[in-house]
Image (cartoon, rainbow, N blue to C red):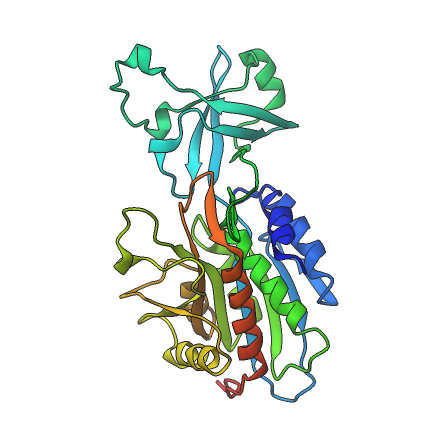
Length: 344
């Protein structure tokens, strides 16, 4: 499997939260190669299963979310500009002049309007989302025929291969997690798993984790690992709050997470010489792991996070080696799963 090309393919599909059908179709097609039972549920989650032949094997869930941050159309002005609301957390400082795609009846390219410094005197304030306008070049009357209120808007930036094995795209959060799980399945091909493995590519994580809540209830796993992203150190960032790119995935440790699973991942990494880092959180993780921990009867949950620079921007940067090491750690850990199935 060429991880760079899988990342290019996954990030090329649009999937702003709540409207993940394109990204979901792409992920479903890729997952079918590894799971005989793959389906899309009513929330938009993509779910696949690989059963174990062992009796009373625990149910393990691997999750990565499908959706990405973006915008939603809230109104169209008479003079042909689109107003939008944010879907997920966005940094409005960098929005002026960004290229976007409006997913109307057809995909329409647009640009977020900006005031030239010559006219603003260099004192343009940070836009509030309610002040943001998107210019498509169409008149208001034409736009009303092509765009509906509630249509999603995504960033339009190319997939970039940077120096070394770094790559950039607008939806690495969390398509790189999906890529990591797919590569894990590639590594486990034709192996007898000691667990019943469920794969979840979840919807609506960026807007409240609804997909994880619903799937966690229906699947009722004994163990759940959310494969997501975390902050990677960039210029000027506090290294105490961030991981380092190319140094391996970050294993989560938090009051809401299972110390048993965290320690199991750490031990697996050590035994297999897989680079890893620790991500210590003092409360909730802000990921789907929080949902799995309390879904139905609850699951032993953990996070495994890929360091990422420039989160929730049009150009999120990761190291492909971190994705590969995430997969190798998951594959080694899954082959050693020996936790007793929950009896309650």
